Amino acid sequence: MDVLTLTGADVARLLDPDALVDALADAFAALTRDEVAAPPRSQVASDAGILLSMPAHRRGGPIGVKLVSVFEGNGALGLPSHLALVALFDEATGAPVALMDGASITAARTAGAAALSCRLAARPESRVLAVVGAGVQARAHLAAIPRVRPVEEIRVASLYPEETAALAALDSRARVAPSIEEAVRGADVVALCTSSGTPVIDAAWIAPGTHVTSVGYHPPAGELPRPLAAAGRLLVETRRAFEAPPVGCGELAALDPATGTELGEVVLGLRPGRTSPDEITVYKAMGHAVEDLAAAALVYERARAEGIGGMLVL
Image 1 (cartoon, rainbow, N blue to C red):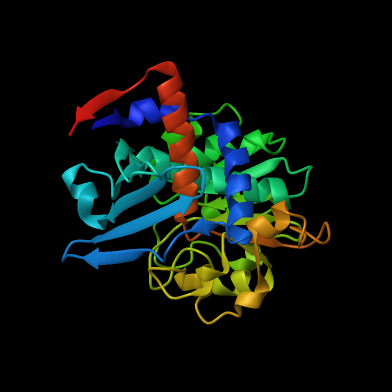
Image 2 (image 1 turned 135 degrees about the vertical axis):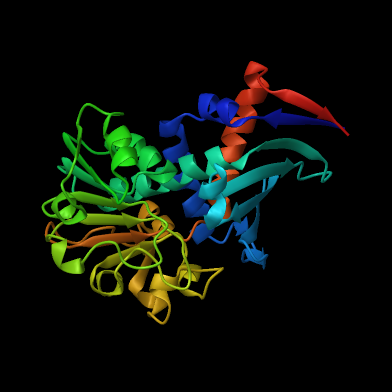
């Protein structure tokens, strides 16, 4: 058997960000229609971190599995805290067909889903973006969100001055804010992209009409203030986000799942993403395997069409 292999550089070259947002919208609609097989993610822990397994399948496409490790101490070793692989298997035979870098898939699909939430719920005239964090996800969000809203000003802030300055240098619209509070106050869209186990903003800083996205995962709690999750119009990938980690999000534990609106419901026109200009909308990501499947399938098909990648013979 021949298995296509793709590096992080290959994935970055092949994954079109606009096509990805559209593919994610379609995937979330399928998820809401119960057309995706995706058992709850499971994890195994070592003394240093955890390894998560995230399988998914949608009829007519490959079976996908992402294995992602979260080892917060990796920074001291010069390694990313999140490392991952995505494997694709033929749906008819179960034969492995592709193995690709999962960290680049994770970064792109997570930011792509946040951008989709902005397209569905942020005010159309949103022009000021605040990015909290300065790592991989912050860079991905800096690139993705301005593609769906007419962003003119980007404020970036984190606890790490050098990384924050490097992030701001990636876009001529970006500047380093004096503090996280000053970045957030008055912003139209606030993107939380940290690995914090405690809230990184205060709900009082969020103005009426703001759209907040939060993608950090650090159970048992996380970066998103619980009062904000409870008070704002809450968007989720699936209502399983209200379950306990590792399936769901710590910030949403014990909240009523009925308070959440699935992205797929908004895509399908079943529920609104926003009901008024002054409403605060909040997207809390748990990370769902259907996102990895949608992104990896796009990469795989384009790689085959363009003859890109290596080959592993089993």
